[in-house]
Length: 165
Image (cartoon, rainbow, N blue to C red):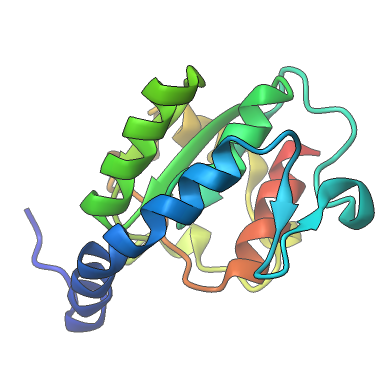
């Protein structure tokens, strides 16, 4: 296994240590009647973040944490893959999947070294490569087990929406 860059290891350590603080609010969000966004928990019907038609769509949630966004994508018929740099956050996501009976793939890893994913715009992402990655058939040399952690939540939500569209 390749050693992680120092900043990725530091980020992983931070989120592994901080993960327990997200369990209570994560559970509240998973059990809500509809998605809520941000610290003010604005209801989805006011925000309109999720596309209306998600049935059968592939989606990637980068930096998924508790898997909250992926859970709503799955509940609306999408086939999400949640990816995170933190093993502890993914453990919480797995616990919530079991508790709320919502299943989707969860992967552990980092986006480091996967240049096709290092994009400032979802429109620049190779959608065919994204779908292949979802199906576990990444390009040769691509760390396929891989996670694609992106620390910018705004970019992450735009990416999920772009791939689900």
